[in-house]
Length: 110
Image 1 (cartoon, one colour):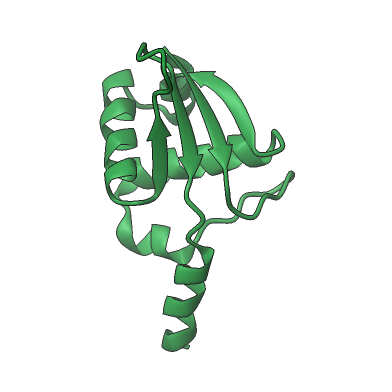
Image 2 (image 1 turned 120 degrees about the horizontal axis):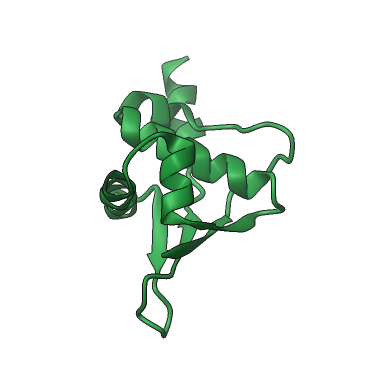
């Protein structure tokens, strides 16, 4: 299975920025996968292609855990999934831009 990732948020080529909300809300698997998506998209001008097995190897989790975690991130608004017209094992993953929400939340706390 091959997955395409696209970051709709602020991109940086040589570093990865994550919202503070990710640290507060995500479990270790969710945080790891989200950070991986942010990193590989940012390093590749906003999108990349990577198989689920490659993602699993890089994130040091099983392919099943990648699928389960990816679905959770989509259900809870961290990413969007698009299967496209082919309905095979290829997904497009879009990282949702949550920077305004993050800034509003943590601005109030400071």
